[in-house]
Image (tube, rainbow, N blue to C red; front, side, top):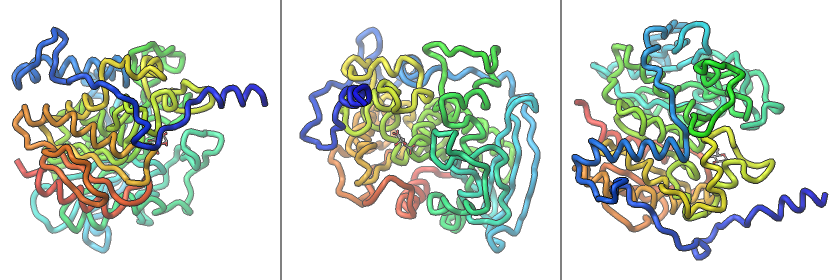
Length: 423
Ligand code: GCU
């Protein structure tokens, strides 16, 4: 009792009011390690690489280069139906072993619109509950792996069941995407790595490490967010092999922890033509130095019994209650997407993810977009709830709670129509 009281007392009160945000200084992403501000050429040739190394070192860890293993990738079409959704779409369900059959597999579910002619642009994102939850379609296979009832708690996980079918479909809005000429590709994030501290042993991090399940992770090595981001890239490999997909128009999207993964995937993989963060919060689009809502300490497991230490590389937790010492902030992550289009979205009641901090992440990344000739965000004024703003960097703060809704998707599709043009 006493101990838990002491631990509880050690956790600082969460800041949820703007007036309580402390003064902070943001490092300029355009100032290189030699102290000089770079021009567009300097960003491309040198500074962007430094920023990527900093993100690896202090936040996500380094993703191993698996390009030499591409030839080992195996995929099987498990099911294909050219008359899905009452004839409006073609559904393909693939099982993919990105590093050969000895490794884990990813079940990728793909819908492409029918009757549009030519190749389709696609939104790709990982889902939280299994492919059968993301859409309301009786033909979608149930995952054979565990699915979580309570994220991050394997004890409260279960086999997938029919009862869950379609339960997250409002987050994916498949019919809307298809009607507007876009495809959807999704996979269960637990296929890549189950989301708990020991989950990596079942996923690709163990499969790709020479020591396998005996790996002792060192500071600077990748973690859960990095693994999910890697899974997004391997899924893009698969989409690129599908003749009906326009691989030059694949948008990567993610919500919350998977929004962190979407941004990190977009940063590392220049093939993603558009990058979307839906309420990614701390360790995603939100500035850590504001200490608003979820903090580095809370998310990284600095306080016993809380947080998600398996998401980030070890160094990240050392900035707990010491955000001022961070040589970077999350606007650096957003800047790495430039000059490609980027959309950052918040929800007004989702204070845990710090809507204004997410907006400011985009504001402070904007100079990099404009330097590279993109129209960027083009405003520093936090927009009223429900209004979408921006040019090639989009932002909105939707009314309501932490979720992905039809309103979010309508904005993403409008933005993609404007910014993800056929090349
Ligand atoms: C928790 C966590 C967030 C995360 C969210 C989610 O709230 O603190 O960082 O984004 O879960 O993934 O739903």
